[in-house]
Length: 336
Figure 1 (tube, helix red, strand yellow):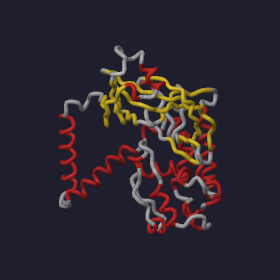
Figure 2 (tube, rainbow, N blue to C red):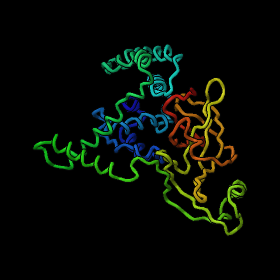
Figure 3 (cartoon, rainbow, N blue to C red):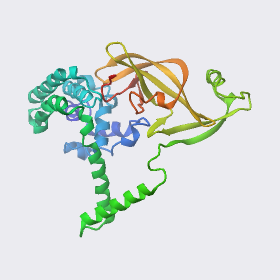
Figure 4 (tube, rainbow, N blue to C red):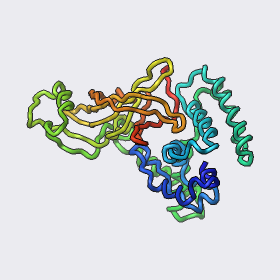
């Protein structure tokens, strides 16, 4: 798609590089922000970065280049592949999706042959076996290789930092075992962590009126001298809650349209963690951006952190395009 944008003189490689540098990633996607794609990399047709960084770029590509995505012929391939990935990453996976997934993989293979015959590689054919593989072994997300890629990335970094290549296997295995011993010796290694970060003590009267009204029933002695602790981030049972994130809390209608909650405040009162959330209205699904368009309702409520993670235990980011709010979900969601 980048090559097509350049060959059609829609965007030069230099402009593509500038746009990728200027794009502001959300707090949940920022850890997977890839290295800068220089003009020399694009000329060689290479996209550098780790596996997670490439997935993040693939996911956000239509949002980064939202103004040109509709004029690209290869958008049809992207949309088809994106739909395949949404099903492949789905967990749980419905058996009724298998015939549709198989038809999508055949269509993707035909699109590649028709539009990009020079890029017809064995992986394009292998994708047509996903439906049978899922039918035999269950959701493919349960046996994907991303955890191997993460461990492999650590070993590659150790190999460079150690600067010792005489017996690299011994060096890496020893360093890895020492690291595992350190982790297992930590007292909280196997415990569920519930810890807040970037704390600020706030007087209750500094909070908005609708938030104060919600908190009246949660605080025993409620007056103008009452203070609460506000946090920017919360790590709750291995799930990171970031102020401004969006969580999927329900699937409505037969189409299983996701319902979203927007985290406004992360508060701690005594020993209890409370989230002040706003209900968002799902307006429509934009296929070109592969994202849901949302509207703010300004309807606030109080939720416990564990109420937001039963469907998708991961925070999502809101991106603003043309004064509209969009949320990008990578996998298809369903209720068992």
